[in-house]
Image (cartoon, rainbow, N blue to C red; front, side, top):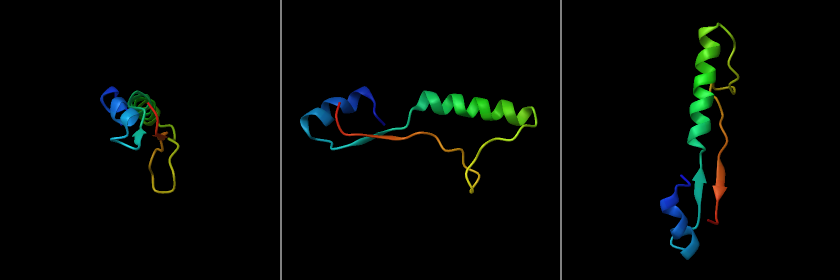
Length: 61
C-alpha cells in the first residue's frame, strides 16, 4: 500500500512501485454495501460477485 513508510524507498529507488488501494474508500464502500443489503437493495458487483474498488499504481512519492 502507498503508506508513508514506503515513500522514501520509492524516492531513492529501493522500491520501484507500490499499489494504493485506498483503504478508507474500501471501508466506505463496505458500509454502503451493507446498508443496501440491510434495506434489501441490490449491490453493484462484477460477474463474480465482487465489489470492485479503485487501485492505483504509484511509482513516485
